[in-house]
Length: 356
Image (cartoon, rainbow, N blue to C red; front, side, top):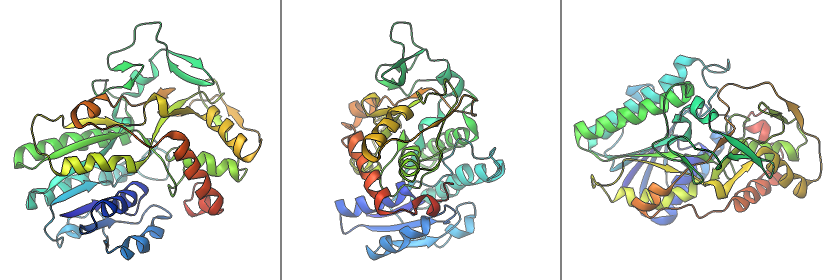
């Protein structure tokens, strides 16, 4: 099987590439990346040492994709993944849409040409920010959690956010670009008869992830805490109770293997994939974990809200479990330990990934 991975030098793309070869060494993998993310160039040589073809390509340019050989499957792991992208002054709104939507369209044209299967790595941030913010929550053990004593909105339960939760605007420009990509990908698959799967991922985390406050938050927090960089609890009650679940990209591999072999229309085309409430943690809880590992240090507080932040978001992956017999296996503690060991071994990681 010949597989194309876009964004192969990013954290998710590179992790999946190595994992797919670990599963089947005879696979041929071609990777595309524009290397716009600081630190991504560090992943080129390890990938090439495994026989992976890494091409410098900008997905916004259709001509960069014209010389690609025939492929059997494509994994679209390329995106600007920040909910502040397009509004924070570091990227323009047009650049965001070009990268995340138009780039996917250009990849879909390649899939159409070769009748290749297509898997889009989407995001939990396609869900409505307003609807997420309106979920009634309580503070339990220094973390927000849904208030199960009152009626919850459709798509919310103790298991997390399900696929039928609202995707109404606002979802951020980032979320809108991914939601539009989902729609276009499904239409391409239907119109041109090739399999398309949409995997809505929760927060991905693990060793080697580039850490920013608005993306890769677990990696950023652990690295910044260890280096005694300034950290702040932003928004809500200023106590760090905002809570997210955590998923290692290696846990995606078992599902991808099944999707490669399946084109049945009875399978759901969109599924949520996340660590779920049992693998969720608030910033305050993460600070306590860091304190136990690295020692005590102060955390600043700023109650001023930040755009598109939500108090609680954990993914309900029961549909993926029912349809694909999929569930996350790598526990939160294992992920945090992996990040911490990487942080200790790479003291310049924040500078490398331009987190500060």
